[in-house]
Amino acid sequence: MPDTIFKKIINKEIPANIAYEDDLCIAFHDVQPKAPVHVLLIPKQEIENVAALTENDRDVAGHLLVKVHEVAELLDLENGYRIVANCGADGGQSVDHLHFHILGGRALGWPPG
Image 1 (cartoon, rainbow, N blue to C red):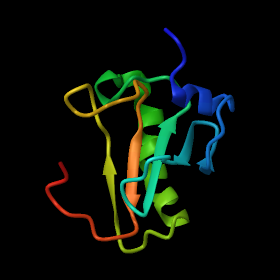
Image 2 (cartoon, rainbow, N blue to C red; image 1 turned 45 degrees about the vertical axis):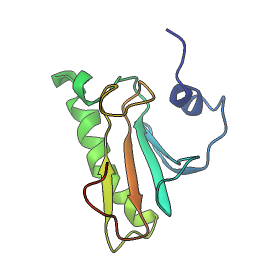
Image 3 (cartoon, rainbow, N blue to C red; image 1 turned 180 degrees about the vertical axis):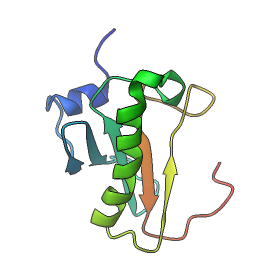
């Protein structure tokens, strides 16, 4: 299976506007933002989506959820933010690599889609 665009960003083969990075994950600004602040947080480990998570992924999954708030703080989203994880084709997932959208910078409506 060829590398996804996210894997190429992790490998620094494609440039991205990086908001945060550590040994387990990377966060970068979405090139087609849906809010004033729209960052994608992804694990460096290749996991297809939330449905593909297993007990073996517990540490990386927990790490990602903790980092969501830290990234939101770095982005000055003190008034709140939304986290979205699309899963599968019907869920709107367009890249087969687990990712969390962190959206904010304005009041977000409901329902989202």
